[in-house]
Amino acid sequence: MTNAATDLVGQTLGTYTLERLLGQGGFAWAFVGRDPQGTPVAIKVLKPRYAGDPQFASRFRNESETAAKLEHPNIIRIRSVAKTGASGARHHGGAGIRAPAGRHSSRPEA
Image 1 (cartoon, helix red, strand yellow):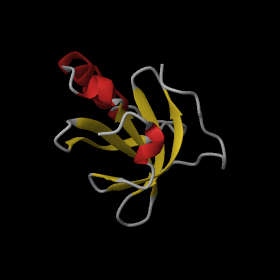
Image 2 (image 1 turned 90 degrees about the vertical axis):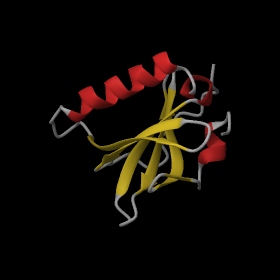
Image 3 (image 1 turned 135 degrees about the vertical axis):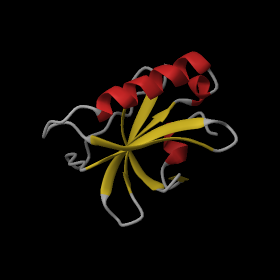
Image 4 (image 1 turned 180 degrees about the vertical axis):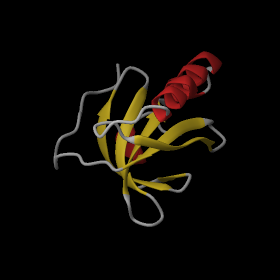
């Protein structure tokens, strides 16, 4: 797996295609992508340096499970949580993204 979020653009994770970087946090990147039916989705990917760490993987899964329980018009519904590839990349995909065009973080990973 890559260490740069931009290297993932155009790649497929599970059933989702990553179209562009939307933003990033302390331990994950968020991408705009598409599901197999072409529906726009948000995909959150655990950064490689944390993907192999059981503690971070557990936190990521817990965050995903908690977010999946929330229902609000301003919260993207979690559709899936998965571990992909030999590197153990973890990601979750959410439906219904509506992001302003051109708004994304280009800050380098710390």
